[in-house]
Image 1: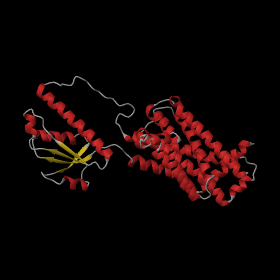
Image 2: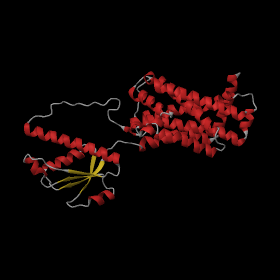
Image 3: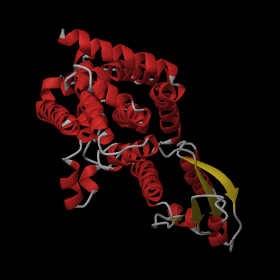
Image 4: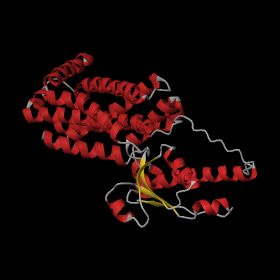
Length: 372
């Protein structure tokens, strides 16, 4: 009897969702749009940095140094500047991110066994890109130094055979880190907005009062309202992961079942939170604004999706513990990239279960009070 009532409400909600193009666009179109937008546009990889060169030596050694920069694929030479060039104006026109300056006695000093000097001028307006450029340049010059020493003494002088190996993401592609994070961000946003707008729409049309006079309890109403959007959100999550596989080459290394379980728990909490939002507002426009503010901003800035939590101030780090996306991203990245079991992350998973339970409890209390 109870199940039949829940399914009746769910069937009504599914019919209404099919007839509402805005809801369908939000549940299906928005995840696809965000995936394409963030997946392709948001990229922390630094490749093909435009660089200018002021080569005052024009010798073999200077050409080799320039070639080491260009052949690394990290840098692209876009200009050969003359002596006395206005580097500041060059940076202001955004023609390059760095300028390599080689003095006229560069090759002569190297041939004489003296220490030669070279300078790299970097546009520091983008601090993260500038830091990466400096790291690349330091590594390239370090490799050039080793090759010069080997040429002179016939052997390598470094006694340590250092061979780094990167696990889980050998190519260090930022897409492999960002796209799994998109799953948590997109699902939180769409799930909260879909349920919030759905219930507020009932308020605006006056049909919510009709539901309250039916023999439906608050729990049955909550379950019936969230069940269709839970199914649609799971389908959207599957589509996102499939797109990540075929568009970005990201394979799921772990268990599909573990991924399904944690996504299900996360979505239940997000849908319940959408119901709470709907109990606080009376118009769809306000539901959209409040839902976006309370779901999207924490999912972007306080979850570790883009900005590392350990780099935040300590008070802000403490605040991140209150948001479920933080824990969901830890689990999803571990399952997808590392192939870890869900039980390795039992602590964040326990938090997600508690969060979903508490959210639905508060939603039930709110609906009960409104009926009273």
